[in-house]
Length: 421
Length: 113
Image (cartoon, rainbow over all chains, first blue to last red; front, side, top):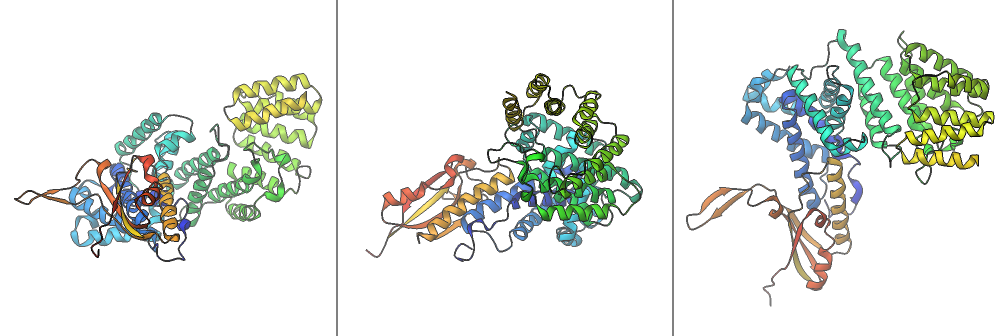
């Protein structure tokens, strides 16, 4: 404890409370049943409060996680005894909870490491259930699995706490009404469900990497949560699908650039101007590894293609040496797979570097459906600069400026406009 | 050096997210570390919010919580300070004031006078 000089002040692992909150909530929800999700969260909150009040005075125990689990286990056993919750919940463990002889051992069993991971996986599939809307899936994942508070979630999505609370409430009601249990889906249903889970993690990562928050361009916490959960999927043989590996590869490649992407004053540094020595080599290597793993199956998903594109950038020693031909081709494949104007936008940018600015401009002007998107107008502005039409460039940058809420993006656009003068 | 007791009252963190709770706890660790490094920290205990209350000549036993959460004693430190003035300055570094927490500073009575 405090008297041991070898123990440091900041010894407590970063985000320990948040991560353990997510783990405990998953295990407790599995124990108490999905209908009792709020009760599980109350137990988690009580457990953390107890830790907080004791640790702050007595210091950090030898094994903080084990300490938390011991408290949570006791509270769970008490709750199960008092409320006879087991009489109304259906799961693979409900029989074991009915008898006093097996109750405590069952609770203890579920708090073992591998079972915790299993509970988190089940929770992920439940939170990303296709019967609830995507925004609600995200909110529920962030709240339950990532241990974020309602205020923090509202903050990430630029909305108010009320909206998030309502979203969570409706989602939980839906899960309760549909009697969705924390069972891992049977293999036949797995692909469909896995898609929802992967999509949720993809959105979570993007929200972190391209934060819509005005002050924070990159929310590293959201990115690392998405990667952590994706790694959990890959660690389990049932969910270790090629597309999960492809998604993780994509995340690794993107995350490798996170540091270099932010200037000292919090502004964006464009891919073209990034100091490539600041890219994280270990993450790029991990990205390559997972992309190789992703090649196992016969199916190619959009995550494969996006990861391959991100990998092209990661492999290039300079912006000029980027293989724009490959990137254009990959974007063409991607736009055949899913018709999205944002993909066409990226393809047009690749054409600009691979073919010519004029060809890029032509491709950009052919895109429909991005008139309200700042990235489209910002890209148009850049290409107009390259073809020498400064008046059109200025007009495009001004349009883009009106359409973004991010302070960093605004700064970048203003900088570009000043450069025109 | 004289002994002083810091009694910590209130300082509710139940509305905070796990992340914010951990951050607040970090401030406590820093404070305790500082007191220890200066050899001012003698001992301390944390008190759980639950408990019993025994009152009156009939020794009536009732369940806690005793009062509103803002009045609950959460724990105490015994510290070493030159005088009350210095003890108060030390107590001012408790991280709980922003949460509405209160610290009572009491000199520990000496019997070997």
